[in-house]
Length: 215
Image (tube, rainbow, N blue to C red; front, side, top):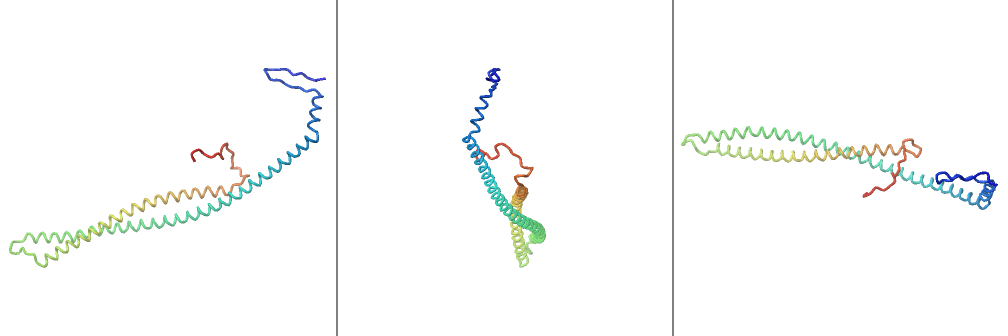
């Protein structure tokens, strides 16, 4: 007979079976057909696990190869950016030196120009009999024109130098940001290259493999 009852507590039942029911269930569970299905399922599970680990190892090797290639490319680009950054810094320094020289030259040219203009002004204040345009005055006029033209050329060159310096500084700023980004990426990739599935830094988070929206 049955060894227990089935009391109902808050709409949930606690089932107790009699020995006959247990024996019948065990006979069904241990039949050759059931055990064969269990063995086949166990074998299939083992095969699936082995296949899954093989796929994981293949993908891990592929990821490591791609990561190594990325590290090489980043290292190469970092060197090129650093070389370009050094070159543009040298160019900015040279332009700054030339700018200083041009400013000094423009100031120096103002001296002979001022002297020549003063001489011409003094000559115009002479009395009528001496107020003539002789060879000396012609040379003074030429000198003022030549010095003025040279100073205008210097001023135009100075403006171009300063404009080029602004462009170079903007380019240098962009290169510095690029170099900083590559350094950070290289640091992270080198760290990632040392990680393995057994690394204690690897944490599992829900949804990490989910493709982001609007990506």
